[in-house]
Length: 338
Picture 1: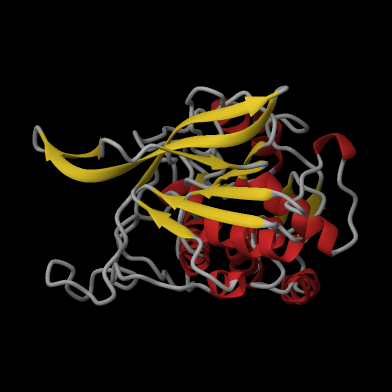
Picture 2: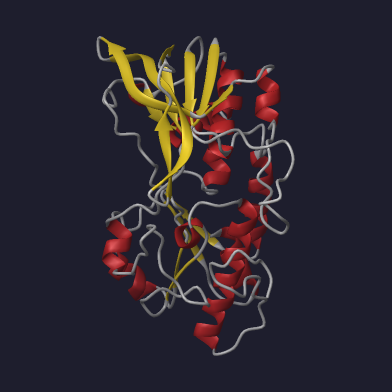
């Protein structure tokens, strides 16, 4: 969203950025920990953008505080860049127990505390003095790990359901494919020991007095069944892992339904992403989408490229031509350059 806004402002358009949170920056602000991304860098860019004429309106939840129809009446074009913020859940027995949190609320609170911002006592969570289990081995899980270390967790386990990647690129994974190799993040280094356990499936959350106290797990193998890969339990590998705090970091399943998307009546693909064409326009003329909302959860570099791509499409739509560069020539294709 910020990348798109800056490009459009530099092309001469009047741009307003709406943010439902109290600070601008999205996952950069509250999702990524301070030890990975210093927020002064975001503030520096926002100051630059304000000087270039971009208007920021925080605390505005589009679809709730302002109706989508009202938004369309006020602006000539709208860019949706609200991210793929619908987390993947783990609906197993015991899910209703207290002490089981999605990763993003946990990371958001940690970032707010780091900068002296208030956190509601009724929704407060911290890893201090707790036995923490993180389910998910991606970047978000790594961020939960580094944060838990800094908050003073007494024990940490990180579960990943897939097998441990090889130390070196395999022959079935040639360049230019993403090299699926075993990586050690700075958060894992901070932990001082290897906390990851691979091929672990959580079967049940166990609790006492309404709070989680342990996870019942089993080791799994990936096997081909009926032409598809499936996780098959290994008999005799069941285990009970004690935990006071469980963090679900298993990725996301698309954009939040209802509200804005429902009011705008934009089409969504089977993966939960907003459908767009080669110029990042949705199925509704004048409505564009970029970033995780259009391609699914991805990296910051892709978000920047997507935002600039959408800016090019908006400029073309409004002016009939554009001098803005189009970083992505293939829409949702994984190739970054035309």
